[in-house]
Image (cartoon, rainbow, N blue to C red; front, side, top):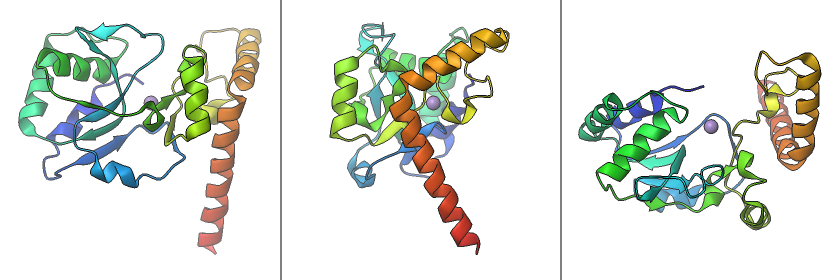
Length: 197
Ligand SMILES: [Mn+2]
């Protein structure tokens, strides 16, 4: 869903430091190192936008952010938003434009902190290296395993035959990721069931 909600994080200045995560993340590793990471920190948005950048800088993905809320920053982000057209990258575009235009320092997190699965077939080597060496957060961009079989993976206007074929293709292409999500989902259900007893 495209919206600007992430910008509000910067107004929460009762907190000194925040770690923001998208809802489509699967946590697969130890998060303690995040304690020592100074804001702002984000992982790069590799993929269809390889080489694409906001001005001189590469694009960061806003699915995982270590940030310091600050009313002034919030105001600057709103100012940046006013000068832009609402587009595909929503709040990510605004945040990246602000960082670039104002040369705000950002620490670049290793992509294992935000492994963007829809980039799997674009950055094959990097992707498989990270899969082998350990993922912290797997980011289910575009492909939502919880929606599989419900025709929610692709455009609503598509025909049933097309939906079915696309569903099968995605299930095959992301079988490893879907399996990880399924096993995490299953173990959470077991924990919830046993804690309810
Ligand atoms: Mn996301």
